[in-house]
Length: 407
Ligand code: SF4
Image 1 (cartoon, rainbow, N blue to C red):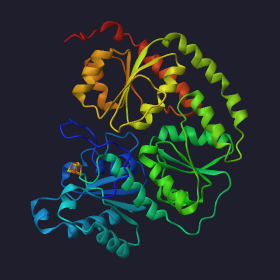
Image 2: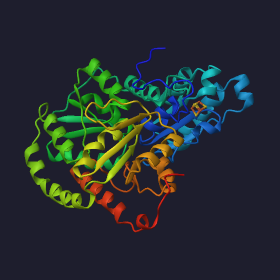
Image 3: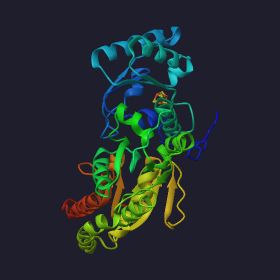
Image 4: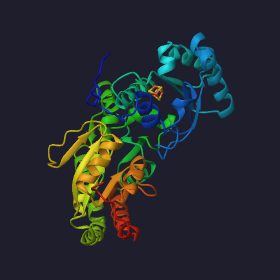
């Protein structure tokens, strides 16, 4: 199998906690798209992570609930019935059908069923061949999601809209709201944030952008690359986390598009003054980052801008960091994470909710880097971020708890 995954292979014996291709496709990339029915062609267990992992997951999710008889005799008929019923009851803009390990192994032809359902209903049905065993990790699922959606938007009749972009690889609705507003202020129109605010209509309109801005290259550069090859739309990798990163990204965008960056940066200078005040409280504190590739890398600078030091970084993807001289661990398991926290004894752990209980168990302050209630991207987001980080240390509980790291 062609493998252009952006992920280091898991070695035999690793106690890996990486997600499968299905998770990368269904939960990470496609989960946020509005008014779509997600139909997981699987036994019920594969749909377990439908909602709780991503805060902005939307739409309806169902499984075909494959049982032993279906595995023996095939589940194509059951799948077709499920698609037709979902369309009839929920009137979605599209149905996304996901292959999983069991239905991939028995060879159900989900592409043929999707085509048949489309012919019967005229509602787009996209089949993702993302069985968990395909590829090395969830990263292959990102690729499958991007290539399948690209085939869907492939449109010869591109009519470029002046000064327009797509934000690709932003999966957080709160961040996308802030960024769309910010880009509007500099005079740029966002056609689609893929997938935080995506709808089928917005996805189809993506071909008309002048520039693609890639927020998370591990998950979504695949789509930007395909659009560059096919439509000649250039793309730029951007980072809107932290004041400096945000300024740099805006100035880089202004090399491609007509953007009034200086005025917007100047207007935001008060935010820098406020966050510099917070710095006095945070100076010298050590933070340990455990995130997917994008946030693991992107959080370094914002924490440094708040006077904090990054004690170490753990991810599930294998990242290369040329300008970071601290400890970087790939493919970390929960046990290894506990060991590392005990060893590094950081003042703060930043991760997503999966790690919260480990941090709390070890009496280390925890910060949800995905932004539980507010967005952290852009200037406005950096202010939210600084406030929330200071807020964690203001909680009295951390002065009352202590963990014996020698245990
Ligand atoms: S059975 Fe396969 S597709 Fe389902 S969750 Fe497990 S690895 Fe992923």
